Image 1: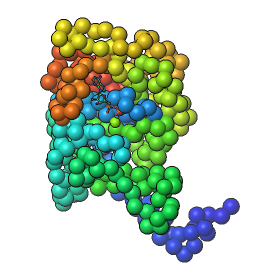
Image 2 (image 1 turned 90 degrees about the vertical axis):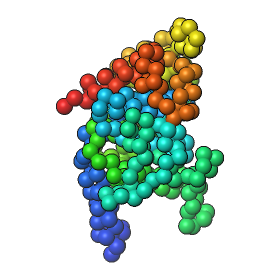
Image 3 (image 1 turned 45 degrees about the horizontal axis):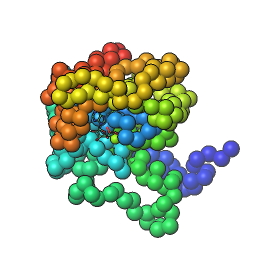
Image 4 (image 1 turned 180 degrees about the vertical axis):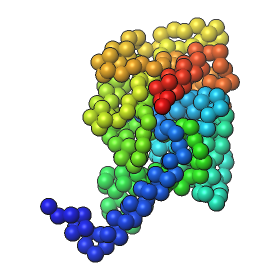
Length: 296
Ligand SMILES: Nc1ncnc2c1ncn2[C@@H]1O[C@H](COP(=O)(O)OP(=O)(O)O)[C@@H](O)[C@H]1O
Ligand SMILES: [Mg+2]
């Protein structure tokens, strides 16, 4: 079989050296992070960013050093949810200084590079025609993400949370970049439509041997903002069934609370501003479960 160097010719050792150097820089940066945790789903709109932002603010409020990477490059949400949409990034001696959001969470997001929220992310391919090919786009996105991880001056972190884009295949590209992944949380809503997609993402993660921590059920009922009563929103019971079928613990059930959505829009940390609500309590117990699962 031909070796990589045979195929790459004279430049091979150079390219290989460059790849190794990039990997080493990422490893050095992440060596100061105790736990890298990914939040994924496969499905869009189920609350991955909500769970990431909520978990991050609860952990930071407890005194943990927390960073978040908005790995959803085309649908970034964390900058707004954590109230840093208007912050400017600056270059410090150790790299790009992350924006500092609610509860002191350090944030890196594509949103911080875009002039306004209406501007989409576009990738310009030097060869023109190839610009639409999936392989090229996936590679480019992985490169940007590696730069987010490597070039950000995170400092010492207890937790670095990765908010992933939808799509059951997207996680593999991100996981492939990471030298160490402590855990993966899987977010779903209690419908069979959502779970049909989420199951595929779980199976793919299990086949790769990713460290799945468990499921988070979001939109588990509706909290009336006036009287605080909890009423059904979707059919109940599907998530427990899926958790059992997939062999995963159900770590938290977060109800839908219209005040949470409003606070997310305003960049405020609902889990901290409304601690005595069912959604905030669910986020707090999720943080506890994650910390418990990741103790050395
Ligand atoms: N439990 C919840 N209560 C109220 N609003 C929620 C809840 N979960 C998500 N949302 C809202 O629903 C929308 C989609 O959630 P988001 O976290 O962006 O999903 P995803 O990251 O999976 O695409 C957001 O506007 C968010 O504020
Ligand atoms: Mg999102």
